Each structure stands twice: as C-alpha cells, then as structure tokens.
Amino acid sequence: MKWTVIQLQKFRNNAMKIDDYIEVAADLRQRDPEIRGASPIHVTGKADIDSQKVTFHLHLTGTLILPCSRTLADVEYPINIRSIETFMLKPLEYDLEELEEIHDVQGGIIDLMPIIQELLLLEVPMQVYCEAEITDPALQTGKDWEVMTEEQFELEQQQQKKKVDPRLAGLAELLKSDEE
Image (spheres, rainbow, N blue to C red):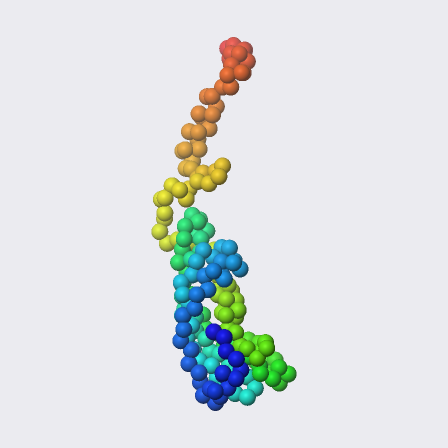
C-alpha cells in the first residue's frame, strides 16, 4: 500500500482501483496490547489522481480479536470502515474547510499503511462483550483471585471461622470458658 507520486501519475485523470488484503496484526498488537489479533484486512476502493492531490476512497473490512470485558475470552469484532484520505502534492494549495483527511506527501512516497493502522485503532471500542456465557473455569481465576458465587463465599467464610490457629488453641479454650 505504498506508491511513489510518479507511479500514481500514470493514473492521472483516471481512477486507480484498489483491491488488496493486508496483514496488520503484528503492528496493531505492538501499538495496542489489548488487540490480540486481526484477520487480513480487505482494502477496497479507488484513488482519484490530479495535478494537485491524490484522493483515496477506502473501504476496510476485517475482524479484530479483542478481550471480552467480563471474561477476558477472545471476541471477534467485525470492522467495516469507510474513509476518504487526501494527499496534497502541492501542500500550500488546499482548502482547510474540506471534511476529508488531508496528508502531506513524504519524500515523494504515499504510504497508506500508517493511515490504515490509525483507522483500525480508532475503531477499537472501549468494551467488548461475548455473546454467550463462557463456563470455562480457567477464565474464572487468576493470580491470588477467583470468581465465586455468594454461597461459595459464605461457605468459605464459615470454614475460616472454624479454623483455629494451633498456637492460639489454649487461648480459644479460655475464651470459650469465659463465655460459658
């Protein structure tokens, strides 16, 4: 998804069709550790090229693998993004009132990968939930913690009350005799 301005000028006054699959999983995981994976992203659209600018009309589809906010299980989150990105070939000759994203050409090369990655990162929701309840016990425990029902908690509390430290057994005997 990288072209030189000279390569794009071949399509001047004609639309250049875009239909490609890109791998972004490793780059997305590096930028956001919450993202566990991604399917190959299908990038379709066209590029309109003229003497002053190159405008990309992009449609991105794919799937991100994110953790469920309740159970931390993997959730496939579908992505469907439409975006218009404009690269100015002559930087000072553009209208700031346009609603499109405007980018400068760096070193005569137009690279869509950073823009696509940014669009995907902006699409990640704050919370994702699994549709089905997962009963996997491995997801219900962690280091020094576990999820339990109220009944399990009350039972554990009662068992802890019944246990007496053997070093304090004599003191417990005295307290029982004082209560009687």
